[in-house]
Image (cartoon, rainbow, N blue to C red; front, side, top):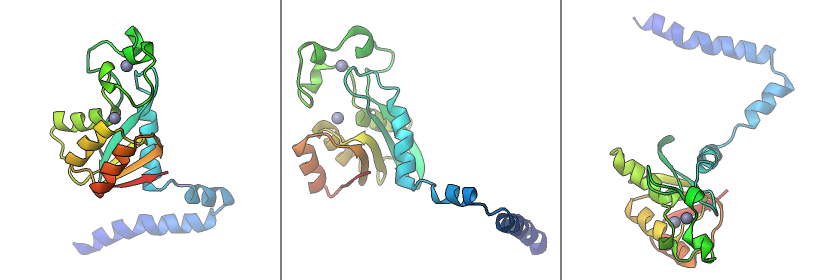
Length: 178
Ligand SMILES: [Zn+2]
Ligand SMILES: [Zn+2]
């Protein structure tokens, strides 16, 4: 019983190794070395997610990951089936509200809010997960992230919100910028 299993397991490996040695060109080596690490891999995916944003100002993407599996994704925009700021305009833009202020004037949900809501909607546990986000969360999102049991955040771009950074630090959630 164990013999066929062993053969099936070892054969492809051996074949690969032999072929690898024979065909070890500079190109194949370069490809191997250029593989993104996991944080870069998930953050790159989230950057694609952010392209679905319907905010007139900033395109943000977010994703929750546990054990190298994507649990849910989200981007910033109005609630499902409702008109988006992109289509009907945004009061924050019309009133020239500075970045980071008067979030309640906008119809949109933040990407981090949407990713947590998506997980809840589909019954996925957020506890112990890592949040990948194109930007540093604002303070509203930071509070939700803390209570969703997210333990680690990986971001690409910063966003000036000292209270958000302070609260995440207080909650001992590490924020890594790539
Ligand atoms: Zn808006
Ligand atoms: Zn936010």
